[in-house]
Image (cartoon, rainbow, N blue to C red; front, top):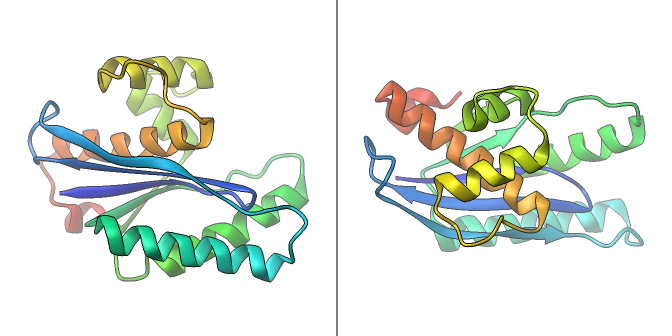
Length: 168
């Protein structure tokens, strides 16, 4: 099974694909992790199109079975929230044929560290330990996407569920 974890953003969208054998937390491979960036100076429609095109290419190349994405949490900056919401919509459109599982940041942090209010460095160190990585994943957006994907793997393993029955 393959899951595509996505940390949505307009300027930078993190992504990570993990392949694993259901029922096993040790038999997995990180297929790819990285970021899709869009220049701030470009028109919004161009940036969204770039995000869509690059994500469709990743889906075509890496062939995930499902997508796990972080939900939008409104912060103080409305403009940022609107930008992220638009990017998230484009991401969901790009993955329209895949089952989708949505997580809050609190759920991801809790599943990874056991504490829903964990700070980013705690999550990153735990990901480094759990996935036996030599270094903490970078950049942060790719690390977040990896945590989102791993959250799905953990949930699928604990529930013994197939990707189709878990995704909503």
